[in-house]
Length: 145
Image (cartoon, rainbow, N blue to C red):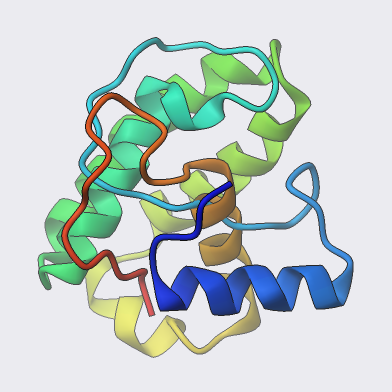
């Protein structure tokens, strides 16, 4: 896995230090990558439509559009539910997506330092890695903070 941002590098370093794995409570990168399928074998969640929506939600967050952030995570929920039967990591991803989809836009900033927000951020960044889809050059990708 190629780390494309300093924030992701810090998150991944922290996950390695804590002994977390992608199948548990970890993160995924997100960026504007077109979906390649709605389902994928284990390890390829980044290439799914669900992760494309997650990356779009993170991009909206980075642009300060919290309403659009929530909308993308809401769109990702049913897509992630389809993946759960095929990949056990998808269940972890679904939990993180549901967290962000149900977090009211006006509460994002206040929630961002919480352990739950940070854990779900780590999960989405790890399982929905930027660069996994056909277009892999997101501009200065940040993560919800």
